[in-house]
Length: 166
Image 1 (cartoon, rainbow, N blue to C red):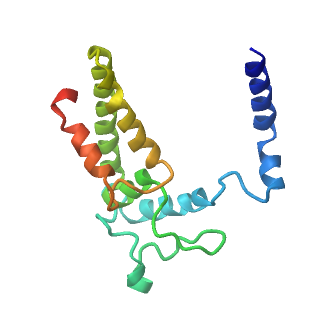
Image 2: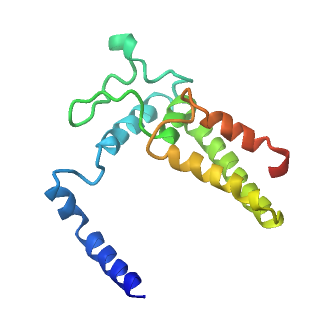
């Protein structure tokens, strides 16, 4: 009980002074500046073709030079990002807001099915789909992994087409 009380007090002190703590450390609240260019990315998508996007691998093309759709996306530090550092935002860039909406509907259905499977199945491994769905969500919140050359998309398709979850 004492550790819980101390922990809660520390949480509230840190929470109420977060900005000051980050400023004292010479950082901003984003820690990396990743979210600074998200409004520019969204504005670029909305200006081009918000419904269908730029096409798969059609936005981040540094080899195109002046024809690169992402040429104006620059961090406050002068860093030119190779992606949006958000899997969901990159998905919207590639397949538009319509595609992101359809993916979100599919992801929500997968999440509901994983929770239902865990409730109905009384085995120890029944929570594995929930853990994998949470991993897919968390790993794409601040990094781009859905359409990159990693296993996340395969994992999502594997879970979405699993007979146990449908």
